[in-house]
Structure formats: C-alpha cells, structure tokens
Image (tube, rainbow over all chains, first blue to last red; front, side, top):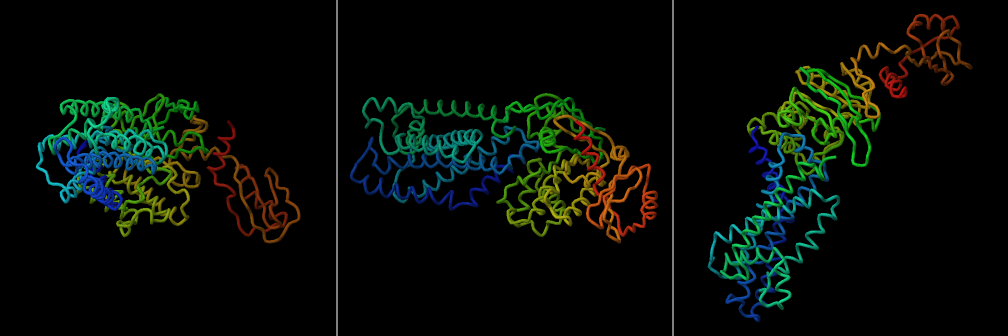
Length: 254
Length: 303
C-alpha cells in the first residue's frame, strides 16, 4: 500500500480548498494586517518611539506575522476537518485503507501550508511599512513552522471533539484571540507590572511571538531554547492525543 | 472463498442499545447477496462495522480472508461502499470526488484518471465530470457514489439502499449496472426496502431483525416456502358480494375488483374453473404483493 499517494491526495485537496475560497482565506489577513501596520505601526507607533532598541513598527511586525500563522493554521484544520465530519465525507477516508497517522499528517500539512502562506503574505505586506535585516532566518522559519504545526494539531483536536459549529468558534474567539493579544504582539512584557509579567509567562503564545521576533529583529523577552523545548513538547503531546482520539474513533465513529 | 465472514458480531451503543446480538454470516465470493430487515433491525450497524465506520463491541469480521482487526488495510482494500445517504463533498466536482477516492486507495495518478473515466462512463456521468456535485439530481448523486465505490475495483461492493428515492427508470438502469458488475466477478451485498429488487437481483439472502439473523438461505428455497399467493382480479361485470371459492380467501375490494389468497395446492386452473362456473369473467390478473415481501412480513411478524 502506497500511503504517500493517500497523503498527497489529502494535502492537495486541502490546498485546493483554501485556494478556491481565497477571498475568505487569504484576502482578509492581508487587509486586516495592513490596517494593523497603518494604525498601530505608523500612526500610533511613530509617537511611541522604540522598544528594546527597535522602532515600534519593527517591534510589532514579527508578532503580527506569527499571530496570522497561529490563527490561520488553526482555522484551516478546524473548519476543514469539522466540515468533513459534518458532511460525513470523512467516511471516504475511514472506509479506505488510510492509516490514522496519514489522515492526521495530511490535514496538519494543509494547516501548516495555509498558516505559512498567510504568514508570507503578511510578511510581504510588512515590507511596505518596515525595513529590517533578518537576524536569524533559521530561528524565524523554524519557529513559524513549529507554531503552525502546533496550532494545526490543536485545530484538529478541536474539530474531532466538536459537535456543532459553535464548538469550533469557541476556542478561536475566547482562547486564541485573547492569548494572542496578550502574548506580547504589541508590547514587551517588561512594560507590565510584575504580577502580570508572571501571569504572562503562562501564555504559550508569548514564547512563540518572542522567538519569532528574535529570529527577525534579534529582540526577545524570553529564553529561545526554552521556547523550542516547549513547542516540541506540545507538538509531541498533541500528536499522541490526536492519534489516540482517531484510534478510539472519538468524534468520527459510533 | 468467503467474500465476507462475520463471527458472533456484537454491538452495544454507548446509550445501552444492543444493535447486534451476536450475528454470524457468510457470503461466498461472486454472490449477489441481500441483507434485509426492518428499520432499526441492525443492517446499517452491521454494514458500518464491515466498512469500518462503526466500532464493533466484540466478534470478528473477515473480508476475503483478511481480518478487519489484524489485517485492516488489506481487508479495507477489498471493499467498496455505497452508503444510504449522500456523503461526498458537495462543493467538489464529480471527477474530483472519484479521483480523490482513488488517491485514498493509493492508486497512481495515471491509473486513477483511467479508472475514474471508466467508472464515470459506466455510470453515464462522464458528461457531468466537471459539474459541481451539489448541482446534480438525486439519481446522479447516487451514481456518483457508486462510481466512487468502484474506482479501486473492489472485490466486495456493499450497496446500502442504493435505489432509495430514485425514479423507476433510474432504478432499472441501476439494476442492470449492478448485475453487470456482479457478472464481472464482484461480490455484491445489497440492502434495500424494495423487496422486488432483492428478489429479482439476489441469489442468497439474510434477514436481520432486532439484532439477530432470523433467516439465511438461498432465494429460491426461501420463496418455495410460500404456500399462499395473493392476486388481484379485474372483473368484466360488477359484483354485489364476494363470491365463495373453495379453499380461497376472497375479498371484494370494489364492485369490479377481487382480492384472492390462493393456496398453492389449489392452483390457478381450479380458481378459474370455479369463477367460470359462477359466470364471473376475469379481464386481468396481477400479484397483490411481492412474494418476498410476504415472506419478509411473515418472518419479522413471527418473532
């Protein structure tokens, strides 16, 4: 059995899906982030000055890129896999000799590709507003890749456990968005009172934003090595949990 | 070789409902097999387990000698499923749906394209290959699901009420297609509520009721167990009361229509002799019920 063909079929289907609906998937982040750069970066940022030696515009660009990667890798998998469940065309995969790890890796790859593609679109737009030399391309790219993987996995688990369309909007609206905004995208945690600095350390998105910021402009509030250990740890845990749910058929089988 | 072998298959759902109470069933390679039963009898659960959509509580499933638990991928490769309800992505094109399914079965692109074309032509859907599937009629959607199920040339094709809700013309063309596929060597398991369909297509039959197999035999010997035929007679002249015919139950449905239940030992010649003796002229005659339907009702009601 050639599993690579099944894997490619799922990945191409996913890419085709989000490209076909590009006005819903690729255009909105381009418009939203342009507004972020204009309003926060340009109009307000010019009055703020520098943070950790970087201009405010340069400081917020990495956070806005990684925030787009997080929300779109998550959204791609959660909406696509839940729709597949809802329309019952998940049965096409369950009937076929496709192992669970191929199903999982196919959908996760789709989420990673969309997350990184949106990240690239936002990065291109940022070039209209900011000028910076990339500090460490390997750290920047690997942070983006691991972040997209982690949130694709989270989206997959959300879709598996969801029983209604409400269930797939709760996490993005009430967990991801607040954590992203409180994850140091627009500010440094050093600017917070000590108690909020400590609380912020429990927000995993803070680590990813800072690692990516370090990769792009060489500025970070936290330890990069710790961020990578944390991301890999989360990815391993979520992968095992996803495979367990698939093995048990939770959310997809009676 | 056994195309399908179920051993003491049980399924209890999380709400405590026992859908299958230990069924044993064997289907021979090349067979055209009917799996019948009233709504909620356990047919769909059994098919769900065979096609890996439902997890069995206990028991074994073997498909062409491959155990579904221990040799899952090979067992699955042998099956094609046409489900009861439309379950493809309604935003995909007809060709895309079939082509993707070929991909899930690991078929190389070139072969997948050839098989997709073959199956869509066989289902008379080639002209619709680029149509988005939600724009198709109900009958076409069912044919898309058959093409999708056949794209990897399965050795066992399971059709779960494939003709439900389609008009008689399409139903007849689907019967021809199913017979053609079976003649080419594919084993078929059919569930249907149209018992006429099962009677005319299938060679062997199992009837499932309340999670148990209540009948499992070949169609011919099952039908030979029928002792009474039911006929409806259109008369030339109106009658006021139902005539008395020895050994038969007679009912006057309207003034020119009689319903007669006639035991096999009496036969039609004797019936007509008695009608002629009473000056009753018959213009036409038809079966009141399908023979299998009669048996089905007897078997299910006898429980």
